Length: 432
Figure 1: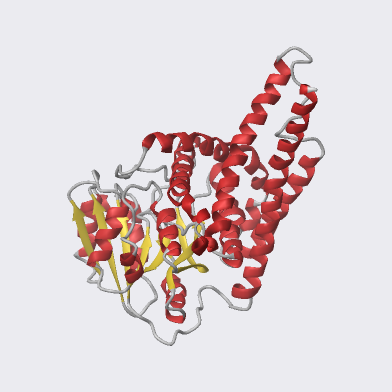
Figure 2: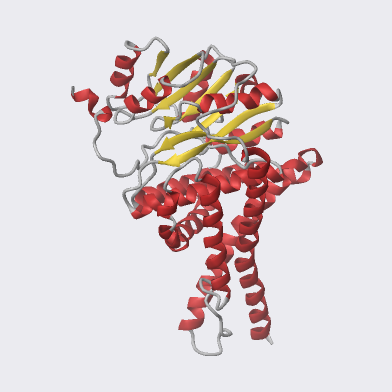
């Protein structure tokens, strides 16, 4: 009788492990398609934005920590914005390389550029706060120190602030620029089929889980109201998104606001990045779990429930894998016969087909912003094997680490893996 009950529980758990990602994938595709027809269809090319009734000035904030190899290229693109009035503020957050020298040399050549040097590394949240306090303008465009901003990005994001005074933040559309390895090519598809699609769907059905830390525009008065970015959060972008939405502000996604970024191309760098993301998500879950008992915050209930279910899914998948391995090792009759949770018989065909359909839909959605996405479609067949495992393991490891870490500790910079790049003229300017 006990073996029968265990087998019944196994089949129930296996059903959840299989059907939950299938359901979410279909939900994302439907939501993203609705978003496209509402907000993207008929807009024309991203490099020809519609005229605005007025163009309020903007401040571009660029926190930098050990970005000597990328600062020149990043600042050059930011200074080439196709926008009437803007300033660029680069915050050198206690870099230990030649970042400060690169920034000072560029500031001497460009009147729009101001440089702030922090004596010690304070973390990205504090660097952003320092930049916002020094910014002259109400609207802040925040990008990372390796990001290449599209000339029209400011125009696309500012229109949301002009149209609606309740909008506090507008996140853009990051595109991967290092595609020399399998990991890099897979991430090109990931940012379309997972990141871009989810943001579209979340905007269709309610609220965003997070803005993209690599490109987001903020209304400075809204950020001031919520107390700026939290210095003790590992992912300040997720935290500030929840703080703004809990305060009643609107947060939007603008797919036409492009930025080109570097991503890890080694397994070690990818693991560190995904573990940090997972720990940041766990911090936000713990910090905001009380929204479930606050009726006034019911607009965030779907996001919190999805976050909780994703955490349960990861731990349940790990448990099923351990039990399946145990059923193969232990003597017959100790455990009931269990099928593999990784390839649950015929259902794996349905899951694989849905995965490929999601990639195809995402290619259709983002092909107008990123040419050549079709060339990466073949490589996406490896996504479940590599990224699902890494993302699941990082979620499992992150939660207990966050509980042990506690709160109140300053989150500081760690130089990330920025992929494999060929030396360019822009990046070798310091030798000239």
